[in-house]
Image 1 (cartoon, helix red, strand yellow):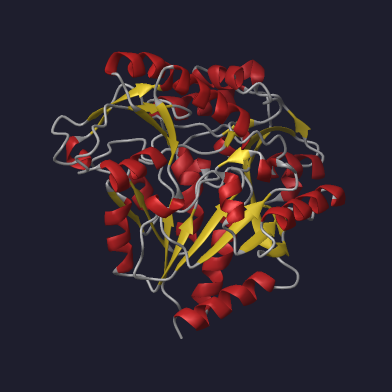
Image 2 (cartoon, helix red, strand yellow):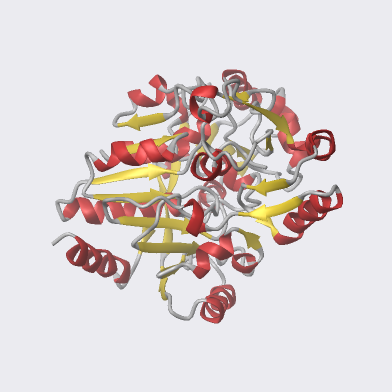
Length: 432
């Protein structure tokens, strides 16, 4: 059971070429346009000359009964414990075992030192933290390569190993908006990034040009590689979530360093609640407080203007975040926020129906060219005078809008430079 990421990795590491198992199918959720396809034979290995079909998760109970399934392997992230156990109950009631695979059996060992940046929920600030650490390493003259959690939504064979070194590579690999959100900021800073489907082959390629590897996690998943240093980010805007979501709590319990991010805008009592939860479950972790600073381009263009606000897609959809950088900037500079609801086109209507908490923000959805066009049409239909875009990707590279676009982003800041010292000490111990 997956979402085109962790599921493929677990298969590659634990089941491909393993004669003790016959994998009948993948089921998929969250990500559109995945179901009805096939995990290709070239990736699936010699035991699966026809590949492996991918079904919608809604077909799960029927598959268990029809195929007499013995075991169902759960393999996706950012799910609340009640929903996880409800899925377990469904599987068990159908007569199959329900399994969760541990980091110990799914992590690959690298020849290079690995720093893993993980989180307890999507939208905590992994990418800004990765950029912050990558900058520290760059200033130390270390060759750093970033490996990003997978988002293989296109041709899986072509995406086996993806190397990104420039913005042009995003077009070369036909990246979705979600991929661009996570890859583009790293490329703008001059870092090489890898992603794809086969993370064993990806690791081999990255090791050839890296002194040190940064794992930039997805959602709240744990690393695909055995880390030498694990940094887990928590979010005081969602206090308690660090102990209520799978596999985020695993990331927290494995943390060497636990960041409490966004303390500059969070309530003190929420910061303290998160701090106490960290102390209770992982007392060995070093707790560091960090700010998530909102950077606004051309803020003078925002004041008193009618604005449509665009936020990072996964953060405000299945991440459930209601207040992102775009909305913060809009309120700070007194924009008149336009609800996108009356102007939604095509599949974006379904997105708002599925995620009922969405109101005055438009998630940057774009898993297919048609959906990217729908996003463009929705923006252009609105009576907004400006677009406040808080998606990490530069939307003007892929859509044409009839109003000015003001970009907003988060950057990590720390006052005491504790994280900087930890990273420097780590490098000295591992490389110098």
